[in-house]
Image (cartoon, rainbow, N blue to C red):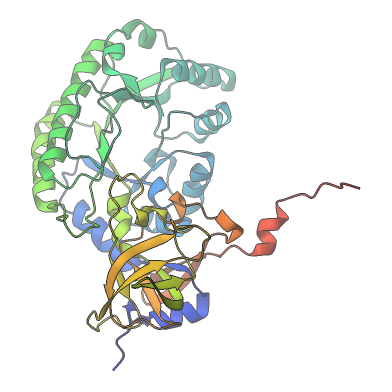
Length: 423
Protein backbone atom coordinates (compact mmCIF):
# COMPACT_ATOMS: atom_id res chain seq x y z
CA UNK A 1 0.00 0.00 0.00
CA UNK A 2 1.39 3.39 -1.03
CA UNK A 3 1.87 5.99 1.64
CA UNK A 4 2.37 8.94 -0.69
CA UNK A 5 0.25 12.07 -0.88
CA UNK A 6 -2.63 12.23 -3.38
CA UNK A 7 -4.63 15.15 -4.77
CA UNK A 8 -8.14 14.07 -5.75
CA UNK A 9 -6.78 10.57 -6.25
CA UNK A 10 -3.78 11.69 -8.32
CA UNK A 11 -0.46 10.55 -6.79
CA UNK A 12 1.99 13.38 -6.15
CA UNK A 13 4.75 11.31 -7.79
CA UNK A 14 2.79 11.37 -11.04
CA UNK A 15 2.40 15.14 -10.84
CA UNK A 16 6.13 15.54 -10.18
CA UNK A 17 7.03 13.24 -13.05
CA UNK A 18 4.72 14.97 -15.52
CA UNK A 19 5.31 18.60 -14.55
CA UNK A 20 8.66 18.52 -12.77
CA UNK A 21 9.67 20.13 -9.49
CA UNK A 22 9.56 22.59 -7.81
CA UNK A 23 5.84 22.80 -8.33
CA UNK A 24 2.79 24.49 -6.85
CA UNK A 25 -0.24 22.20 -6.82
CA UNK A 26 -3.73 23.65 -6.26
CA UNK A 27 -6.73 21.49 -5.36
CA UNK A 28 -9.87 22.96 -6.93
CA UNK A 29 -12.10 20.92 -4.64
CA UNK A 30 -10.57 22.64 -1.60
CA UNK A 31 -11.08 26.02 -3.30
CA UNK A 32 -14.73 25.20 -3.86
CA UNK A 33 -15.28 23.93 -0.32
CA UNK A 34 -13.73 27.00 1.31
CA UNK A 35 -15.65 29.42 -0.90
CA UNK A 36 -19.00 27.65 -0.53
CA UNK A 37 -18.65 27.28 3.25
CA UNK A 38 -18.32 31.04 3.49
CA UNK A 39 -20.81 32.02 0.79
CA UNK A 40 -23.54 29.74 2.14
CA UNK A 41 -23.29 31.32 5.60
CA UNK A 42 -22.88 35.01 4.76
CA UNK A 43 -25.80 37.43 4.68
CA UNK A 44 -27.18 37.64 1.11
CA UNK A 45 -26.49 41.40 1.03
CA UNK A 46 -22.76 40.67 1.23
CA UNK A 47 -20.78 39.81 -1.90
CA UNK A 48 -17.52 37.88 -1.69
CA UNK A 49 -14.74 39.43 -3.79
CA UNK A 50 -11.48 37.60 -4.44
CA UNK A 51 -8.33 39.66 -3.92
CA UNK A 52 -6.03 38.58 -6.74
CA UNK A 53 -2.84 39.67 -4.99
CA UNK A 54 -3.01 36.47 -2.95
CA UNK A 55 -2.77 34.28 -6.04
CA UNK A 56 -3.15 35.93 -9.46
CA UNK A 57 -3.12 32.72 -11.49
CA UNK A 58 -5.79 33.12 -14.15
CA UNK A 59 -7.24 29.64 -13.56
CA UNK A 60 -7.40 30.02 -9.78
CA UNK A 61 -9.15 33.37 -10.21
CA UNK A 62 -11.35 32.03 -12.99
CA UNK A 63 -12.52 29.09 -10.93
CA UNK A 64 -13.48 31.33 -8.01
CA UNK A 65 -15.26 33.60 -10.49
CA UNK A 66 -17.20 30.62 -11.84
CA UNK A 67 -18.36 29.91 -8.28
CA UNK A 68 -19.73 33.45 -7.97
CA UNK A 69 -16.90 35.54 -6.53
CA UNK A 70 -16.21 39.09 -7.65
CA UNK A 71 -12.66 40.40 -8.01
CA UNK A 72 -10.51 43.03 -6.31
CA UNK A 73 -7.48 43.97 -8.41
CA UNK A 74 -4.53 46.35 -8.17
CA UNK A 75 -2.60 46.37 -11.46
CA UNK A 76 -3.00 46.42 -15.21
CA UNK A 77 -1.99 42.76 -15.41
CA UNK A 78 -4.62 41.82 -12.83
CA UNK A 79 -7.23 43.74 -14.83
CA UNK A 80 -6.30 41.76 -17.94
CA UNK A 81 -6.36 38.59 -15.83
CA UNK A 82 -9.93 39.06 -14.63
CA UNK A 83 -11.07 39.96 -18.13
CA UNK A 84 -9.47 36.80 -19.49
CA UNK A 85 -10.88 34.77 -16.59
CA UNK A 86 -14.42 35.88 -17.42
CA UNK A 87 -15.31 38.23 -14.57
CA UNK A 88 -18.01 40.75 -15.45
CA UNK A 89 -16.86 44.37 -15.15
CA UNK A 90 -19.73 45.04 -12.73
CA UNK A 91 -18.08 42.57 -10.32
CA UNK A 92 -14.60 44.13 -10.33
CA UNK A 93 -13.08 46.93 -8.25
CA UNK A 94 -9.59 48.39 -8.73
CA UNK A 95 -7.66 49.74 -5.76
CA UNK A 96 -4.12 50.68 -4.77
CA UNK A 97 -2.39 53.82 -3.51
CA UNK A 98 -0.26 54.40 -6.62
CA UNK A 99 -2.36 53.88 -9.73
CA UNK A 100 -0.83 55.24 -12.92
CA UNK A 101 -2.78 57.40 -15.34
CA UNK A 102 -2.68 54.55 -17.88
CA UNK A 103 -4.25 52.20 -15.34
CA UNK A 104 -6.96 54.72 -14.47
CA UNK A 105 -7.71 55.33 -18.16
CA UNK A 106 -8.07 51.57 -18.66
CA UNK A 107 -10.36 51.29 -15.63
CA UNK A 108 -12.62 54.09 -16.92
CA UNK A 109 -12.79 52.43 -20.34
CA UNK A 110 -13.55 49.02 -18.82
CA UNK A 111 -16.59 50.26 -16.90
CA UNK A 112 -15.71 48.57 -13.61
CA UNK A 113 -18.07 48.52 -10.66
CA UNK A 114 -15.80 51.10 -9.04
CA UNK A 115 -12.35 52.61 -8.94
CA UNK A 116 -11.27 52.90 -5.31
CA UNK A 117 -9.72 56.36 -5.01
CA UNK A 118 -7.11 56.78 -2.28
CA UNK A 119 -6.39 60.53 -2.37
CA UNK A 120 -8.07 63.79 -3.42
CA UNK A 121 -5.43 64.10 -6.15
CA UNK A 122 -6.45 60.74 -7.58
CA UNK A 123 -10.08 61.86 -7.65
CA UNK A 124 -8.99 64.86 -9.70
CA UNK A 125 -7.13 62.64 -12.18
CA UNK A 126 -10.16 60.38 -12.65
CA UNK A 127 -12.30 63.49 -13.20
CA UNK A 128 -9.89 64.63 -15.95
CA UNK A 129 -9.83 61.22 -17.59
CA UNK A 130 -13.61 60.97 -17.56
CA UNK A 131 -13.88 64.41 -19.19
CA UNK A 132 -11.32 63.51 -21.88
CA UNK A 133 -13.19 60.28 -22.59
CA UNK A 134 -16.60 61.99 -22.63
CA UNK A 135 -17.77 59.74 -19.80
CA UNK A 136 -20.33 60.75 -17.19
CA UNK A 137 -20.90 59.19 -13.79
CA UNK A 138 -17.68 57.20 -13.53
CA UNK A 139 -18.24 55.25 -10.28
CA UNK A 140 -15.69 55.48 -7.48
CA UNK A 141 -15.40 54.41 -3.87
CA UNK A 142 -13.42 56.50 -1.42
CA UNK A 143 -10.91 54.48 0.53
CA UNK A 144 -10.95 55.65 4.12
CA UNK A 145 -8.07 55.47 6.55
CA UNK A 146 -10.15 55.26 9.74
CA UNK A 147 -9.31 57.15 12.91
CA UNK A 148 -9.80 53.94 14.87
CA UNK A 149 -7.87 50.70 14.80
CA UNK A 150 -8.32 47.15 15.93
CA UNK A 151 -6.15 44.55 17.59
CA UNK A 152 -5.38 41.11 16.28
CA UNK A 153 -4.10 41.93 12.79
CA UNK A 154 -0.99 40.21 11.49
CA UNK A 155 -0.35 43.29 9.32
CA UNK A 156 -2.14 46.58 10.04
CA UNK A 157 -3.35 48.48 6.97
CA UNK A 158 -5.23 51.38 8.58
CA UNK A 159 -6.03 53.29 11.74
CA UNK A 160 -2.61 54.97 11.85
CA UNK A 161 -0.46 57.00 9.41
CA UNK A 162 -0.58 55.03 6.17
CA UNK A 163 -0.14 55.51 2.43
CA UNK A 164 -3.53 53.88 2.00
CA UNK A 165 -6.74 55.85 1.64
CA UNK A 166 -7.81 59.28 2.86
CA UNK A 167 -7.86 60.02 6.57
CA UNK A 168 -11.42 60.00 7.89
CA UNK A 169 -10.96 63.46 9.39
CA UNK A 170 -9.88 64.83 6.00
CA UNK A 171 -12.94 63.30 4.36
CA UNK A 172 -15.25 64.87 6.89
CA UNK A 173 -14.04 68.24 5.64
CA UNK A 174 -14.26 67.34 1.94
CA UNK A 175 -17.92 67.95 1.15
CA UNK A 176 -17.11 70.79 -1.27
CA UNK A 177 -14.50 68.65 -3.05
CA UNK A 178 -17.01 65.85 -3.63
CA UNK A 179 -19.77 68.28 -4.60
CA UNK A 180 -17.47 69.78 -7.21
CA UNK A 181 -17.07 66.51 -9.11
CA UNK A 182 -18.87 66.64 -12.46
CA UNK A 183 -17.90 63.37 -14.14
CA UNK A 184 -17.18 61.20 -11.12
CA UNK A 185 -19.87 59.64 -8.95
CA UNK A 186 -18.94 58.72 -5.39
CA UNK A 187 -21.04 55.66 -4.68
CA UNK A 188 -19.66 54.61 -1.32
CA UNK A 189 -16.64 53.76 0.77
CA UNK A 190 -13.90 51.20 1.22
CA UNK A 191 -11.92 50.44 4.38
CA UNK A 192 -9.43 47.70 5.11
CA UNK A 193 -7.82 47.56 8.52
CA UNK A 194 -5.48 44.58 8.26
CA UNK A 195 -4.87 40.97 7.44
CA UNK A 196 -4.48 37.58 9.12
CA UNK A 197 -7.15 38.12 11.78
CA UNK A 198 -7.68 34.86 13.67
CA UNK A 199 -10.11 36.18 16.28
CA UNK A 200 -13.78 36.43 15.31
CA UNK A 201 -14.41 39.33 17.69
CA UNK A 202 -11.82 41.48 15.93
CA UNK A 203 -13.40 40.93 12.52
CA UNK A 204 -16.89 41.65 13.84
CA UNK A 205 -15.59 44.78 15.56
CA UNK A 206 -14.09 45.94 12.25
CA UNK A 207 -17.34 45.36 10.41
CA UNK A 208 -19.46 47.29 12.89
CA UNK A 209 -17.08 50.25 13.00
CA UNK A 210 -16.66 50.45 9.23
CA UNK A 211 -20.40 50.29 8.53
CA UNK A 212 -21.05 53.01 11.12
CA UNK A 213 -18.28 55.14 9.66
CA UNK A 214 -19.69 54.71 6.13
CA UNK A 215 -23.07 56.00 7.30
CA UNK A 216 -21.48 58.95 9.04
CA UNK A 217 -19.34 59.91 6.03
CA UNK A 218 -22.20 59.49 3.58
CA UNK A 219 -24.19 62.03 5.58
CA UNK A 220 -21.21 64.37 5.98
CA UNK A 221 -20.42 64.31 2.24
CA UNK A 222 -24.05 64.08 1.07
CA UNK A 223 -23.41 61.01 -1.09
CA UNK A 224 -25.51 57.86 -1.50
CA UNK A 225 -24.51 54.56 0.04
CA UNK A 226 -24.59 52.25 -2.96
CA UNK A 227 -21.50 50.18 -2.08
CA UNK A 228 -19.51 49.64 1.11
CA UNK A 229 -16.41 47.45 1.02
CA UNK A 230 -15.69 46.57 4.64
CA UNK A 231 -12.52 44.65 3.88
CA UNK A 232 -11.80 41.10 4.89
CA UNK A 233 -8.56 39.94 6.39
CA UNK A 234 -9.77 36.50 7.49
CA UNK A 235 -6.70 34.68 8.77
CA UNK A 236 -5.30 31.23 8.20
CA UNK A 237 -3.51 29.36 10.99
CA UNK A 238 -0.04 28.42 9.78
CA UNK A 239 1.91 27.91 12.97
CA UNK A 240 1.80 25.46 15.88
CA UNK A 241 0.57 27.98 18.45
CA UNK A 242 -2.24 29.37 16.29
CA UNK A 243 -5.92 28.41 16.34
CA UNK A 244 -8.10 28.32 13.25
CA UNK A 245 -10.48 31.21 12.76
CA UNK A 246 -13.93 30.27 14.05
CA UNK A 247 -15.82 30.79 10.79
CA UNK A 248 -19.25 30.16 12.29
CA UNK A 249 -18.74 32.78 15.02
CA UNK A 250 -17.17 35.22 12.55
CA UNK A 251 -19.99 35.02 10.04
CA UNK A 252 -22.68 35.07 12.71
CA UNK A 253 -21.24 38.29 14.12
CA UNK A 254 -20.83 39.89 10.70
CA UNK A 255 -24.38 38.97 9.74
CA UNK A 256 -25.67 40.45 12.97
CA UNK A 257 -23.90 43.73 12.13
CA UNK A 258 -25.01 43.67 8.50
CA UNK A 259 -28.71 42.94 9.06
CA UNK A 260 -29.80 46.35 10.46
CA UNK A 261 -27.47 48.20 8.07
CA UNK A 262 -28.97 46.39 5.07
CA UNK A 263 -32.47 47.18 6.35
CA UNK A 264 -31.59 50.89 6.54
CA UNK A 265 -29.91 50.85 3.12
CA UNK A 266 -31.75 48.37 0.91
CA UNK A 267 -29.92 47.80 -2.34
CA UNK A 268 -26.52 48.83 -0.95
CA UNK A 269 -23.89 46.39 -2.18
CA UNK A 270 -21.71 45.17 0.67
CA UNK A 271 -18.34 43.66 -0.23
CA UNK A 272 -16.16 41.34 1.82
CA UNK A 273 -12.81 40.98 0.05
CA UNK A 274 -10.67 37.95 0.77
CA UNK A 275 -7.51 36.54 -0.75
CA UNK A 276 -5.45 34.41 1.60
CA UNK A 277 -8.48 32.84 3.26
CA UNK A 278 -9.94 31.63 -0.02
CA UNK A 279 -6.79 30.14 -1.53
CA UNK A 280 -4.22 29.24 1.14
CA UNK A 281 -5.57 25.81 2.03
CA UNK A 282 -5.79 24.61 -1.57
CA UNK A 283 -2.07 24.85 -2.32
CA UNK A 284 0.99 22.68 -1.71
CA UNK A 285 4.51 23.69 -2.68
CA UNK A 286 6.22 20.49 -3.86
CA UNK A 287 10.01 20.20 -3.84
CA UNK A 288 12.36 17.27 -4.39
CA UNK A 289 15.16 16.42 -1.96
CA UNK A 290 18.50 16.60 -3.76
CA UNK A 291 20.83 15.88 -0.85
CA UNK A 292 20.60 14.92 2.81
CA UNK A 293 23.62 15.98 4.84
CA UNK A 294 24.78 16.70 8.36
CA UNK A 295 26.55 19.82 9.60
CA UNK A 296 27.68 20.18 13.21
CA UNK A 297 25.00 17.86 14.48
CA UNK A 298 22.12 19.26 12.40
CA UNK A 299 20.59 17.30 9.51
CA UNK A 300 19.79 19.27 6.36
CA UNK A 301 17.62 18.43 3.38
CA UNK A 302 18.76 20.47 0.38
CA UNK A 303 15.84 20.67 -2.03
CA UNK A 304 15.43 22.00 -5.57
CA UNK A 305 13.19 24.88 -4.48
CA UNK A 306 13.13 27.28 -1.57
CA UNK A 307 12.54 30.87 -0.60
CA UNK A 308 12.86 32.00 -4.22
CA UNK A 309 9.40 30.50 -4.75
CA UNK A 310 7.88 30.64 -1.29
CA UNK A 311 9.09 33.67 0.62
CA UNK A 312 5.89 33.68 2.70
CA UNK A 313 6.93 30.39 4.28
CA UNK A 314 9.93 32.04 5.94
CA UNK A 315 7.90 34.51 7.96
CA UNK A 316 7.63 37.57 5.74
CA UNK A 317 5.90 40.24 7.82
CA UNK A 318 6.66 38.42 11.06
CA UNK A 319 9.39 39.19 13.57
CA UNK A 320 9.57 35.56 14.64
CA UNK A 321 10.52 32.82 12.19
CA UNK A 322 8.08 29.94 12.46
CA UNK A 323 7.56 26.98 10.18
CA UNK A 324 4.66 26.54 7.82
CA UNK A 325 3.36 22.95 8.00
CA UNK A 326 5.81 20.78 6.05
CA UNK A 327 5.19 17.10 5.28
CA UNK A 328 6.92 14.28 3.51
CA UNK A 329 4.77 13.69 0.43
CA UNK A 330 6.59 10.47 -0.41
CA UNK A 331 5.94 9.03 3.07
CA UNK A 332 2.83 11.06 3.83
CA UNK A 333 1.23 8.53 6.16
CA UNK A 334 4.39 7.46 7.99
CA UNK A 335 5.26 8.79 11.45
CA UNK A 336 8.03 11.29 12.04
CA UNK A 337 11.43 9.74 12.78
CA UNK A 338 13.82 12.66 12.91
CA UNK A 339 14.45 16.39 12.76
CA UNK A 340 15.44 18.03 9.46
CA UNK A 341 16.16 21.60 8.39
CA UNK A 342 14.78 22.00 4.88
CA UNK A 343 16.62 24.39 2.59
CA UNK A 344 16.52 25.38 -1.04
CA UNK A 345 19.25 25.65 -3.71
CA UNK A 346 20.15 29.31 -3.22
CA UNK A 347 23.59 30.64 -2.27
CA UNK A 348 22.41 32.35 0.89
CA UNK A 349 22.06 31.03 4.46
CA UNK A 350 18.59 32.59 4.53
CA UNK A 351 17.25 30.02 2.07
CA UNK A 352 15.58 27.94 4.79
CA UNK A 353 11.91 27.00 4.43
CA UNK A 354 11.67 24.79 7.51
CA UNK A 355 13.82 24.70 10.65
CA UNK A 356 14.13 21.41 12.55
CA UNK A 357 11.00 19.90 11.00
CA UNK A 358 9.85 16.52 12.31
CA UNK A 359 9.63 14.16 9.31
CA UNK A 360 9.77 10.47 8.43
CA UNK A 361 13.19 9.37 7.11
CA UNK A 362 14.14 11.57 4.12
CA UNK A 363 16.22 10.26 1.23
CA UNK A 364 17.44 12.00 -1.94
CA UNK A 365 14.64 11.93 -4.49
CA UNK A 366 11.86 12.15 -1.91
CA UNK A 367 9.13 14.74 -2.37
CA UNK A 368 8.40 17.23 0.40
CA UNK A 369 5.47 19.61 0.57
CA UNK A 370 4.89 22.97 2.23
CA UNK A 371 1.18 22.92 2.98
CA UNK A 372 -1.30 25.83 3.08
CA UNK A 373 0.64 27.39 0.22
CA UNK A 374 -2.12 28.55 -2.10
CA UNK A 375 -1.61 32.22 -1.19
CA UNK A 376 1.45 34.44 -1.45
CA UNK A 377 3.71 31.78 -2.95
CA UNK A 378 5.12 32.89 -6.31
CA UNK A 379 3.30 36.23 -6.10
CA UNK A 380 5.34 37.33 -3.06
CA UNK A 381 8.68 35.70 -3.84
CA UNK A 382 11.95 36.71 -5.56
CA UNK A 383 11.56 34.20 -8.36
CA UNK A 384 14.49 35.52 -10.38
CA UNK A 385 17.02 35.31 -7.57
CA UNK A 386 19.99 33.31 -8.94
CA UNK A 387 17.96 33.22 -12.18
CA UNK A 388 16.18 29.99 -11.29
CA UNK A 389 12.89 31.48 -12.49
CA UNK A 390 9.36 30.77 -11.30
CA UNK A 391 8.04 27.21 -10.91
CA UNK A 392 5.23 25.49 -12.71
CA UNK A 393 1.71 25.66 -11.26
CA UNK A 394 -0.89 22.92 -11.60
CA UNK A 395 -4.60 22.95 -10.78
CA UNK A 396 -6.29 19.60 -10.14
CA UNK A 397 -9.96 19.81 -11.08
CA UNK A 398 -12.32 16.83 -11.02
CA UNK A 399 -9.41 14.40 -10.84
CA UNK A 400 -7.52 15.85 -13.80
CA UNK A 401 -4.29 17.84 -13.47
CA UNK A 402 -4.07 20.99 -15.60
CA UNK A 403 -0.86 22.94 -16.15
CA UNK A 404 -1.94 26.50 -15.36
CA UNK A 405 1.48 28.14 -15.45
CA UNK A 406 4.55 26.91 -17.29
CA UNK A 407 7.81 27.03 -15.40
CA UNK A 408 10.36 29.63 -16.44
CA UNK A 409 13.14 28.37 -18.70
CA UNK A 410 16.65 29.80 -18.71
CA UNK A 411 16.45 30.77 -22.38
CA UNK A 412 13.20 32.65 -21.74
CA UNK A 413 14.73 34.57 -18.84
CA UNK A 414 17.69 35.57 -21.01
CA UNK A 415 15.47 36.46 -23.96
CA UNK A 416 14.36 39.65 -22.20
CA UNK A 417 17.96 40.82 -21.73
CA UNK A 418 20.11 42.62 -24.32
CA UNK A 419 23.87 42.35 -24.60
CA UNK A 420 25.63 45.58 -25.41
CA UNK A 421 28.27 45.35 -28.15
CA UNK A 422 31.40 46.34 -26.24
CA UNK A 423 33.65 46.01 -29.28
